Length: 179
Image (cartoon, rainbow, N blue to C red; front, side, top):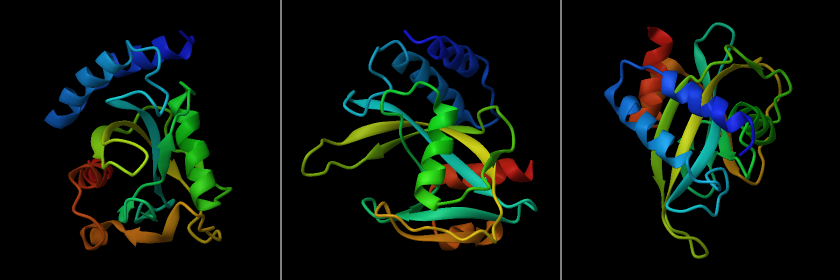
């Protein structure tokens, strides 16, 4: 087991939240981490992913991607593909999906955890993403690069988030910024 997996396990054991759903997720994450292929996309019924809640320096807007496969507005992120350093996974995916070079961690601690269902596709069954999320900051004036993974990228005012999504986990991350 790579040395970073016990660190993630420890970090998740210590993770606290005033959101009951995250406390339930934490126990499921800890169970998943006992599987040697938890960081691989072929591990079913679910696997670890990393994502980024990217805000500007004033914490007024968040960067969302309109995911091409899921046809939803989401935060950037993706599969660990065997990398147990989920913080680096989140940074890598955010950079790849947005083209941003100014990305930086606001804090090294986990910002949010979530478990959500990914629908079946022709070549892969329905499964779960165990998503570890980090709070990042970027220059909102830096040019964005739309890749094949996105239909669009938008800086969205936090008070207009529900114009783009009503997903509870995204509302929860917004609430955390207000705490």
